[in-house]
Amino acid sequence: MRSPRSGLTLATLSDATTAELREIVPAFGSAENPIDVTATVMNDRTLVRRALDAVATDPDVDVIVVCFCVLTGADADAVVVALSDARATHGKPIVVARTGADHLPHREQPLSVRPASRATPPPRCARSAR
Image 1 (cartoon, rainbow, N blue to C red):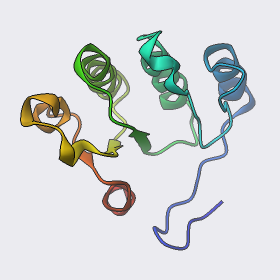
Image 2 (image 1 turned 90 degrees about the horizontal axis):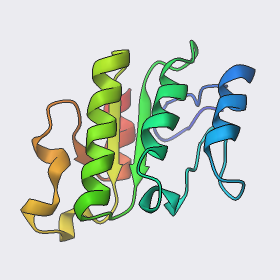
Image 3 (image 1 turned 90 degrees about the vertical axis):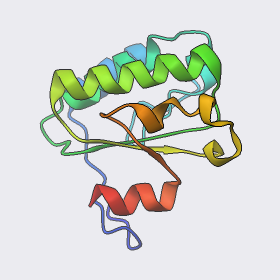
Image 4 (image 1 turned 60 degrees about the horizontal axis):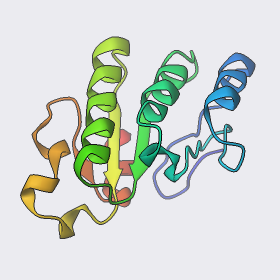
């Protein structure tokens, strides 16, 4: 699937990647691309990292685009660590869209200070992934 606005093509995940994601993603989420790990990340802080590892090892994925809503505190910190670790481990570019981030105090925007990640609104995120 190709987006006419961004020009990006959504990767078709391998059967192995999809099977691995089905083991990770809650039943009410989506293990197909685009993947939705749901708000379960607030109860299982390992979920994002495990999903990133599965997607990053797929040979048809060139760049990972992550979009998440306003998480704060330890929940946001866990996502930041997962993003940074996945980038360091797998070497694939990761672009992050964090909706609502502009409304948080600076101390609640940890992505802006991590070299492996940078939070942007979704439209800019898609443009930067090209």
